[in-house]
Amino acid sequence: MASYASRIINHSKKLKDVSTLLRREHASTVRYFSNTNRAPLNREDTVNVRLGYSPMERIFKCSTSTVPVSSFSNARTNLSSAMGRPMFGKDFSCSMQSARGFSSGSDLPPHQEIGMPSLSPTMTEGNIARWLTKEGDKVAPGEVLCEVETDKATVEMECMEEGYLAKIVKEQGSKEIQVGEVIAITVEDEEDIGKFKDYTPSSTADAAPTKAEPTPTPPKEEKVEQPSTPPEPKASKPSAPPTGERVFASPLARKLAEDNNVPLSNIKGTGPEGRIVKADIDEYLVSGGKGATAKPSKSTDSKVPALDYVDIPHSQIRKVTASRLAFSKQTIPHYYLTVDTCVDKLMGLRSQLNSFQEASGGKRISINDLVVKAAALALRKVPQCNSSWTDDYIRQFKNVNINVAVQTENGLYVPVVKDADKKGLSTIGEEVRLLAQKARENSLKPEDYEGGTFTVSNLGGPFGIKQFCAVVNPPQAAILAIGSAEKRVVPGNGPDQFNFSAYMPVTLSCDHRVVDGAIGAEWLKAFKGYIENPESMLL
Image (cartoon, rainbow, N blue to C red; front, side, top):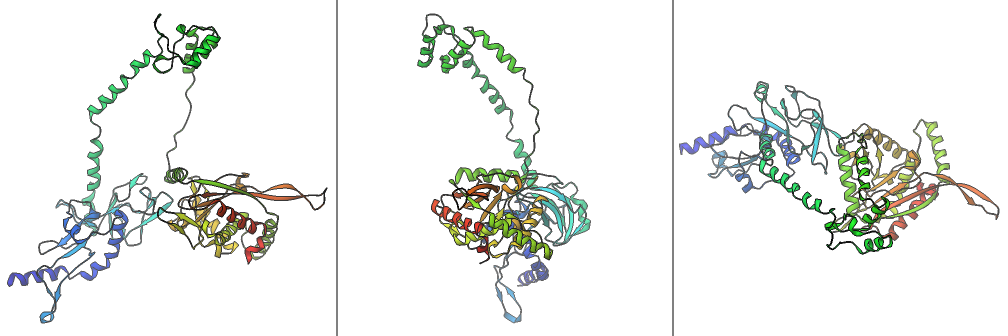
């Protein structure tokens, strides 16, 4: 009975700071899921996981012999209210999932290993662009630790808990850091900072030997021996066949040799197994019947000076653009629809609106702003184009969010104007200018480019491109390519009358799995109607 009472007292001491610990629950849970991207563990998994795992995966089962950790994720207790005070049952236990790591050695105090977070849905690795705090600094929740270059933009990484930055594991400029990989260490007490001067995370230490294992010497020797054997049969291929033996040649080569009185025995075959092909006869005829005359050309080729070039490392946005566009062209069945739109009335409406804007001190409205508005209204009229493909269904979106392609020095960005069908032209123009500026400064946040349902790419206005076909931006089903407007001569009312009108070609690229040809044509008809009668966009 005395031992049972002592256990109760022991547990009550462990839980005396529960109010403080629960305040940290949210930060610990967010960090765990942002670094591991896994579903929560059940109770059986919690019991089976041991301290040898990475700090973000450590699960502790609290019993009478364990030391309490600093944050609770889940606690289950069986309570009875006998004698007016809580009583713990015999099988009392609490499963706690903690983001706080404990070193395996007794010389290091409790510490927090901060991993590379997943800051976008497609992010698998990131780069440390800049550290805004240094080792030894005190950090607080919400304070920016560093800037992380993701696959889409540079995002600020904030601290989740109060403490001190004891160790920066990944220095400024570190590249290709996998999501979840440790980048820094924090501690609660300032006097513990010096103990982590030479600290190496367990995940980094475990990764080192695995990289060294796949380079043993025996495989290298085998690789050297293998390429040495194939050249031997190659040397026998061009050799001329001995006199009296059968000469192997293709029918076309034999016919060409007979027409030009060329003896096949004097020609060295370069085809399979020394076979004489048409190219060998042509080379023999060009060289004037001397097989050795072809050799000087090879020596002159070897004297060609080497090309001068520069290798430019891939940026994160360039890698993502390459992979997504390659995926799009390989998996999406594209088709293209082009139509010419008369923009005379659109130009006139723009001039009137800009005069109002200048009088009121507002920003000028561009042709691209009018195009985005017309595309959004056409999507509302033909919602089949505002969809995306999945293996089980076609998802049709009720929100009309237009991505606008912006070219920068770092690469191609597609920030999004959300609910463009519900916004005015001045609002759309202001958002597009702000997003384009942020894209050029590489300061876009995930909410600035995620959630688009349709994309507009304009190479006509800025670059004068007459017409082009854009690549569908997955998972979207269509993208609109805008060409440059140009003056054309069109027939007038009379037989000898002619007028001048400005026409702007546009091309719609569609995913045929989602948008049939007739649907794409219907959307272009609606878009053309808004462009050629811009007053209808006000209705």
